[in-house]
Image (cartoon, rainbow, N blue to C red; front, side, top):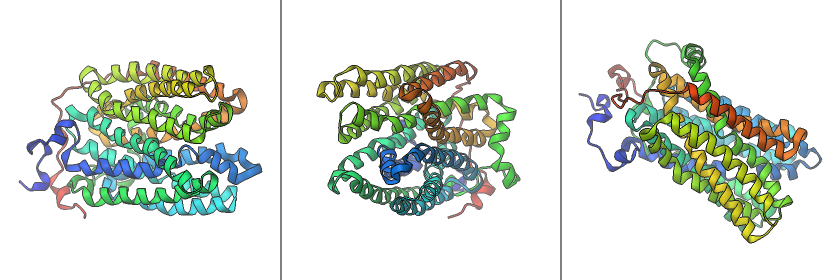
Length: 445
């Protein structure tokens, strides 16, 4: 049997395999961590940074960030569809190139103060990270054994969230004061982010040799248009995929929304420093990292649907309320109040990891069209950035920050109801599909 057509289940298991990380693509997980660290450097200062750059036109910042979310949503869909069509490795290359080119143009646009140039360059940069990261998630699902699907997705989110916003915020925390602080320090941190993105790309592109990522994953004979629109078709044929799409869309929307409102609330309204806010973000999402793989394993053992509904949805709603109300109930600017606020945020970060099994539920809803289902999953994952910023843009002028928070809680209530429709079989007899011989012969370098 050709080594390209040997099933991964026929090879001896390594320590990484037993942990839930397929050994053949282990370097890709590290690549995602470092790439997303670079992508996450700006995540907790971009809103005030753009406000300062735009001056009297700072009211456009929520719209600029919302348009970025639109690009992330589109890019997230394309990551799944193009990975099926071209193979994940080529899509990761495309994502890297898009990110770097438009990051340079974005920084230069900020220097001009032109709202149109800033919006356009930030919009196109939004295609970069989903094409890189989420196409690797498709790669994971094409390789990992079914019985470890939830755990593998959990490890992916350990790396994804480890970079955005956790280590990214830590880099910003160090880089901003090192380069003079304030606006100039933030600009320098954005330039540094490109070195991290480049490093992550190089590790993934040259470190992962697994052959499936170099080949078309969609069935032979399907036209390019059929593959590109397969995600939309599968939602019509299997409505539960549409339900799962909505749940995943809601999942991290509050995270992105809070990135917009909390920097100003914590620093301007409640009296803590930018450094304290960035450190809070690092700690909160470090807790999320620690529990992503844990909840993936819990989902494999206790049930994917049950884990998402009770830990992910209900738990995140309570954690979000804690992260908002505790800082407002303690003494503003106090040290003890700060650490209580961090603890409240950690509660949200931990329980947010309860959504991890959604990455296993979605392809299980339609086993014959896993690629299409994952296209919709990645679209929703990226779309959460759009939904989060859109909720802020709509609710902030109507009901203020508190209205934004309760709008997110209401969305979690909708997700809790929808989870009743997402029960799936967790039959451990399923195996990851083997690459077809003819596909292996056409693999590309």
